[in-house]
Length: 430
Ligand code: ATP
Ligand code: MG
Image (cartoon, rainbow, N blue to C red; front, side, top):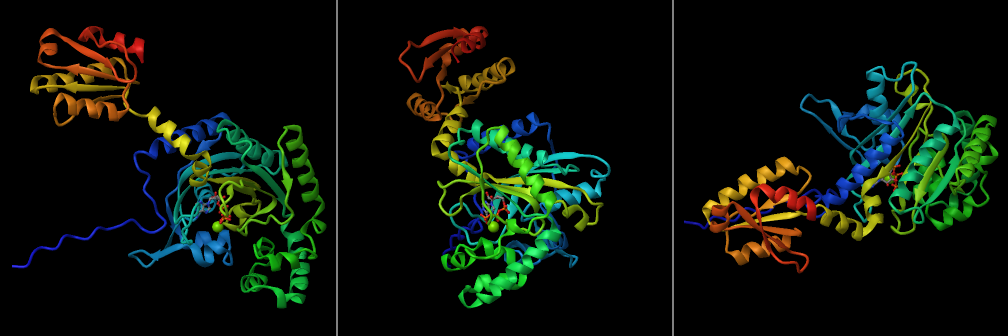
């Protein structure tokens, strides 16, 4: 008889990560802060499916963008339909709004939060499943709308103590018509210098020339130094709107840098674009990115509708908040009371007592010892749980209708408290 082989372990997909119990308190706290922020600006939540028709992303993000060319998780479902795991939320959000008539003759200020999927090379701050908070507004074309989005993000950094860690970069891409004219000038110029362009830039030159501006290659950047500038080809309206945006930001005391090379990787942007960047996360320094996308709704079959929004990468934001933030949230989530029970009668009583305490103190985190164990073993677990108090039940205590309360984090005496008085007593010391 051959020895049965031990089944091999199946691992998670590269670039897709578990959030472990020690990580989730930080996630939950951050998500709560974001929800409260959205509520304080009266933005409403929308939830879209994680899978959409492939055509939705091709048509909105653009055929010749990094995302559509090489990053999408696209597959055929059992009916042969081409589906894609959403690489971002804006297209889905517009699709949902159009499908349910949310854009007709009305303004919308919306947000969503959830996983996005991109087949990128995994590295620090770059994953294949990652989480975004997305914020989108529809029906408002004024630069004050753009400013509100920026102010909202600025408030978040302040709340999280990150105001000094991030820098706001803004730019305007102008109208689609103005950008088309500029594009021709840029292509003419770059063609003259084609010999000095790298492969990536040559490819972009043919497909999406504005993205050449984004190149990180120093040789390419050197050539761009004398290239025609987008801001010399802006239409009057975009120029005036950008000025108004800058005025609001100055009035609100928001510091910004104008970055004329900021173009964003997606096709649908026009006019205002912005990014919040940090130098503390290495190459993956953009934690929030957004802008105006007035043409997208029409491109997806709706009536012309001005729109603007942004997305925040939550992993990068958590990385910026750092380990101390994670640890603080984890310890704030640990049990406050740990019930030690010795003997089967006490074990039963412990469960009943815990329920009664939760009835009166629903906000207190109570953990009952499970699986028995010696007094010493149970105390070890109580200590490790992070609880501030151990509540001890033995045979005698059960008979007398009381529990011993022992502080685990300071030297105070252990005292006996009657079951009926426990809730009041704990309220006093927690
Ligand atoms: P990058 O230039 O870093 O590739 P992007 O322009 O592709 O970013 P957006 O599509 O604008 O990013 O997404 C908004 C935000 O989502 C980014 O600023 C970033 O914080 C986050 N993000 C994007 N891609 C990833 C990823 N693969 N892993 C983790 N976070 C990501
Ligand atoms: Mg990208």
